[in-house]
Length: 127
Image (cartoon, rainbow, N blue to C red; front, top):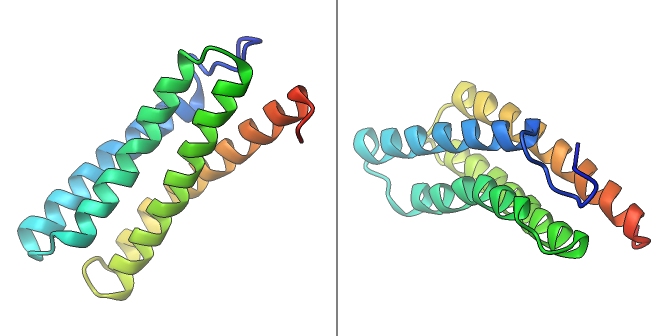
């Protein structure tokens, strides 16, 4: 999953996080245009697109510790995104089916990020 330095070039998590960001952008556009909700959707837009950006940043990490730090922040953003999706669902801005669909994509990313962070912390002796 990494190149020995912790990098994730060409990885599943990188591809999935980008696809997730595209879904988030489209969902937020829909919520803003159709439901006239701007505050919550902008929070999701920020956190949901940050995941992939941080994973890309981790590709250029200066060390394994830097890689783990960036991937840990991506994990935090993914957890935050889960919160905003749940809040949008519970407040009626997105339906349960839509929340479940995008939520299942996010769950895959969360699992991958947890595994990557855990593995790299173990290699560093921090896990």
